[in-house]
Amino acid sequence: MSTADTTKYKKGDEVYVFYSMSKRCQRHRKYVAVLDPRHGTFRPRMGMSEGWVPARVAADQEAPAKVCVEYRWPHFYTMRGQLADPPGLGTEDWSESYPTTHVMPAGGPGLALVPPGSQPELVVLAFRWGGRNEIVAPEQWGETGSSVSDLFLDSFVDMAVVPQLGTSYEVWTVYVEDSTDLVKLADTVHLIFGEHHPARRAKRTVGMFFLYPTGFEENCVPNHETGEDHGAAMVDQKSLFRLMKSCERAGIPTRFPHPSSFYHQLTSKNWTHLMSVVPHLRVPPTVALPRMLIERSCKDAAEKGLASLRALKRHQAELRGEPPGGEITKGVAKLSYSWEALDVKFWEGQAGLEEALHNLTQFIEISQEYTGQPHDCESIIVQEYCEHDLELRQYVVNGVIESQIFTKFCSIKENREFGDFKQFFSKSDAAKAWVGSDHAALDDGERQCRELTNHWLAWAQAQLCEMPPAIRFDYFVGRSKAARGKAVVWTLEICELGFSMLGESKLPAKVFQAMLESCLELGGAQTGVARAGQPSEKAKECSQADSATDEDPETSKTGAEGPATSNGAPDAAVPNRSRKKRR
Image (cartoon, rainbow, N blue to C red; front, side, top):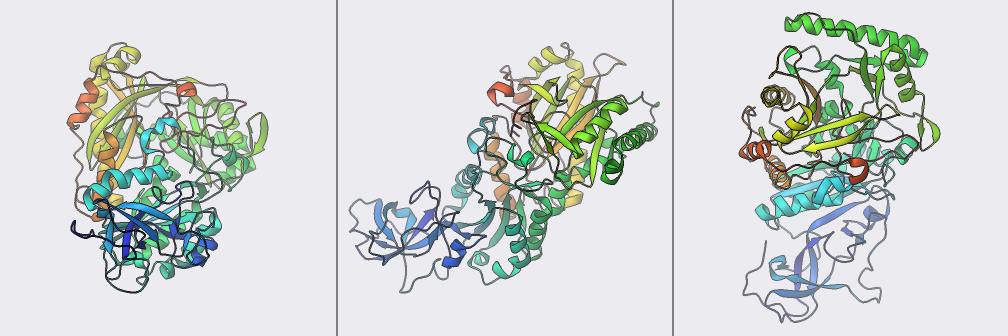
């Protein structure tokens, strides 16, 4: 949709211009073009943030590549309900210069928000944060921002959508402040975004959800104390998944992060205990300890949880044809729907587990004050702690390992959380620092992790009937006590699309391209098969690289999630200090 180079625009010509909320008008206000002023006044507010909008040429075109226009559409609103001065109020119309490639003749009289008869290749319905506490992306997310930020969506559009589709796409933004917005949308999405809505005229219309589901009550102290932005984009998990399912029932597929059922499995972390009896997936002994038992007695619940964990460990050994393992003396307890490596507690012995259960369900110290734990998790996930030398992260795009990073949390802090994070891109440096230069053991661990990634990709396809565009698998790797040169590996975490890439400069473009292929159903992620057994050339380069980074997120904010943590979440809080928001 672009005009020919020979077109010469005159003052007063009716045109359409390709508008982008983050790049046009007053950028700090970020206006969306709404179909009706009530869509910008009342919550949940929604409108088109990128696409063709009506305008009028403000002056005869002089520069061959530029056209000065003023907007004709009268309804531009911000996420807060503030509006741009509409035409006819006596104020000066806002004019801007557009490149000719982003201007086209209107083609007839009348005023419509979208060009009549147009059919973009792709429309993205972007459900994103509209609360007053604006998102602050920690530095370790890099230049593409965190997965809930405007920068992340803008990066996806600029790096993948525009190079392939040009201006044949639209983004319609729906702003969400809390669960009331989610419930309204869930109950009416089939009416709002039915076949009559302009967003549905595209060849492909997809939903993307840039929000964090949480089990905590909205606006509670634990959420408010999370990060510099006070828990921005954290919303009630029940309401969010209800909305996602409503969109999918209306024929709008979820293309970020994942379809609702799979995303629920990952964020709830239910896969950890559900798959712990599948021997080849190498999940540490994990049980779901019912909340009802904990609320009655933390002591009795700890006793039952530990007994169940021991029984499961024996069963795992039987399934693998191995001798019974040793006694379980250490572990972690953690919450579902918990982000940024928070709400993960290391414990030792039954008394330690009892204390961890109390902290996660009753009250806990945050910023030198005790506060209750207002979450609705029906169980606490209890897992044996796996002794290990390091963690290996494998980044998979369209079924291929594109990169891997070696990381480790080197200490357990006073508040029983994990800290002192380090990372290496070089396998040789990681071997020297953490496995006593036993390169053969690390090679063996890497091989086993590739096999595990194949198994997990097959599992993911069973949930989705297609390959996820991108996903990250984290593993514990430790030297075997039985023989030098051999490793023992365990599955640590499955991180959903939107994971932190820890400064891998070439990875975002590959991930975003895979996301676009998924949106357009072009193959790749749609028809891929598990083939992660051999890493890509990029992953091989990373494995052999001589360069390394060695930073502590406590000071540098180069973060990553710790052992048995929540979804892709890095370093957690320190005692007597606000909860740090990192992924």
